[in-house]
Image (cartoon, rainbow, N blue to C red):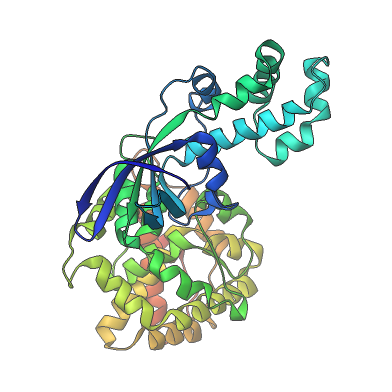
Amino acid sequence: MEIEVLDSKSEGRSTCFLVKASLRTYLNSLPADFDNFHIQRDRTNNVYLDRLIDTVIANRQIPTIVLVADKIDKAKGRADGLKILDGLQRTLRLKAIADAIEIARNANLDAGRTTLLTTHSRELNAKSIEASTFLRAVEEIRKKGIDFLDDCFSQMQWFEIWSHLSEEEQVRKMLLLNAGHKPVKTRHQLELLFLGLLPKLEKSHQNGFVVIREKEKSSISFAKTRQVGEFHFAAVVASLVAYYLGKPVTTNAELISDLQNDESDTSLRKGVESFSYKFAAHLTNFLVELDRLVEKKEGAPGTQWLGREVILVGVFAALGEYARRQEISPEDAFDDLLKKLASCKLNLHEFEKERNRQDLSRVNIGSVNKRAVFQATQDILTSGKPLSLAWSTYFKTE
């Protein structure tokens, strides 16, 4: 992207450049997959952003967009390899406005609203363009001509562009920049803190393992539709934290704070990362084998059951506590659970019955679920004989 540098500020080995460029230059410089930058979330609903076309047409100020660049050449006035740290939602709307203008440019301006929307519905849907945005573009062309709209994208936009920013620093800045906006989902934040683990898991696609991101499918809808071998990344991460601590954990702001709080080599996050890297392949194989075993025993209800984060967290917390007490490796703990679980009766119909009996006004159902699964898994691991799980025992309130 061609830029004009206005100012710069150094921060350690990184530098932030304040620059300006036209909206058209910015949009034309974006790669086709600009909205797939892995630390970003997906499109969010915002009625004010959906009216961004009013701001563009009136040539009003659009808040500064923050980018990270692979390379910045200040002398030549170029920034290349751009990714969006803050401003994805604005950029999505700007791109939709520009695309709407291109469609409107060749539309039959004498046609009515219904005819216009029917004629171009496929193009509008393919490019995620709101009907109101397209109709507004048509209206402006009728009133002022296409040259007016083209000139709107010649207006200058301010950008902050960072260079030499590590991936961890990018995540931290993205979370900071979004602090005053619609909150980033806690599960998405948890995923961001462990993005370095994702490539290790994704390489383990043998044996049918598939990892799903929160931005691709929310944990709630995922649990209802998952297939054997599919696991939500946030649930896997929370489970690893539970294994490392040897107790159930809850994915909330406090956990995120604890994971971010300590930069030392003994920090919780670095501890989880270091041991996770060592057995990523064993982890994925275990998850798939566990999934298939539960599905064989319980059918589709078992597949949905294991797709819940609270279930995985309870299982892994018990595995971590068992491995620590027995002084064995994660791989050995995994093998022990699979062997003993094979001869157990899970009785998940009873699990659901006891779960639904809980008084939601008196208990936190997520915590109760995790505790029940944690205790049941402990019993499976330590029992010297096959068990038939009596969930009424594990769901007893204290």
